Image (cartoon, rainbow, N blue to C red; front, side, top):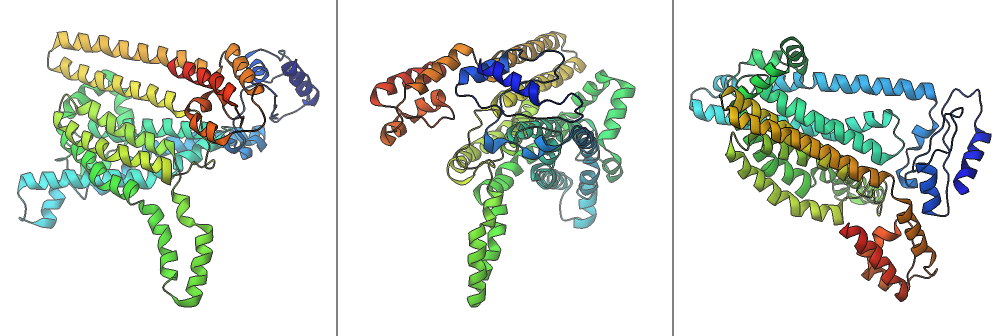
Length: 470
């Protein structure tokens, strides 16, 4: 009845000659009514309206809801154009910098100080550092998040997931595969080859020569570029991770003006107090899941692509995980804060997307291994790897959609049980009991700050344990 009443109210408020988009937020007194409103067809064909679960208030992107239809379409087209240009042109300045770091260029600068093998190693390490630096300055500064918000997403979480997808595709296609595909040997390519190369040339080659030629050239180039990406993982483990995660370099740089003002007399201390109230360093201590997931997936993709061809890649890969896992756990719990505010819980919205994309990365590495086996005339192995690649994608996609449907549209019976548990909870909360049972409570209570007596704790624990086991 409540859901049908919402549909009737929207029908009364919806103007027939409206040329813009209108958004209504319906608030229900039960999860069951909200699930009915979003999972059933309440609107006839003459009313172009649809219902979906609204995000939390802190997660809403209010500017998106206030845009007109024409403005939203124009910004969406502009975002697609800018994203495409970013993907196609990113390699040009990167290759300009890398052209200065080839063994030939370093040989001219250093003269005869290093041998040819030492020049190749130094060039590989310098190129990988340049690659990591350009990723930090362009990809992880929030450019793709701004472009995703322009596309019309209604929540920060959905825009962040869209940005994560773009960053994942960028890392896999532009950084990893394009670097493998373009020069036959990146450490010995000339400056002219690196400077003239861009993703545009790769796209032209694919259209003119076909995907099979792409796989063949990638299979031939993977062994030659293993040194570059071994150095890339080492740079991430020994340089990027200590600066970004251990030292918190961006927050430290924003805290330097306050420290300097405290050494400049009375006026300086007053200015330092004003800066301390605004806490500018906290602006760079946000928990941006899209950055963390994209960095981790990039390292894992490098390991999967080069694990068979260059097993030594696994050593710096394990070093990266040993250094990153405890530091990220500490930062997530005690240092970083979600952009939506402390205490915000997205409900694991990133995890299904991260698992699906990582499955695609596994399939891509299997396709490269298949092409390597094919050009080396290992027919039996190529057939087995091809079947494995098909099974990986089929199983991954089916698993994703099976559990994603339950996440987006939970069963009505489950919503009714949650409402019943919340309805029987008394208004006063015994904080000690709630804190003790919070791991079981948070899945069953959800966003409601409900309370529980000693008798109700058993009901909450059963609901939380049942969901965790399922």
